[in-house]
Length: 142
Image 1 (cartoon, one colour):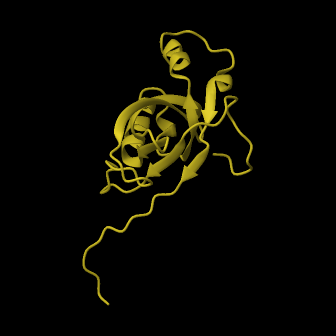
Image 2 (cartoon, helix red, strand yellow; image 1 turned 120 degrees about the horizontal axis):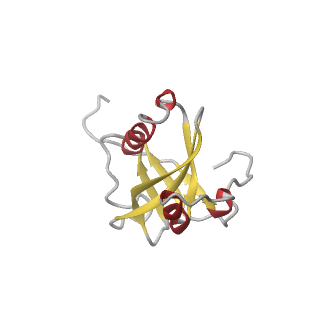
């Protein structure tokens, strides 16, 4: 989400978002309400430094009551590598930001080769980006 409060997408903001940077933590329960999460496919709108914007179809953890999309960073970065290897290998490892989601119907049409004249008119920014903090537990000296 943009720091200045300006929106990138033209659709109303939708969903809360968490990027999970912890390799040893899988979000099978919602960190907000503690209910079980389920898998759901999203068309994530991502801007990669040096490569520009892209839309990536990604199956993510989702909590329906909290409207929370949870993405595991290691999985996302693997999919970015797979996407950029054949087209733009120089973009691999560059900084990126997940801004929101694109309407899935429009995203599917673009996969079929249909040109989208104004892609940002089909993008909804995340209404809120949350940080994930957790205590891995275990023994610690006093």
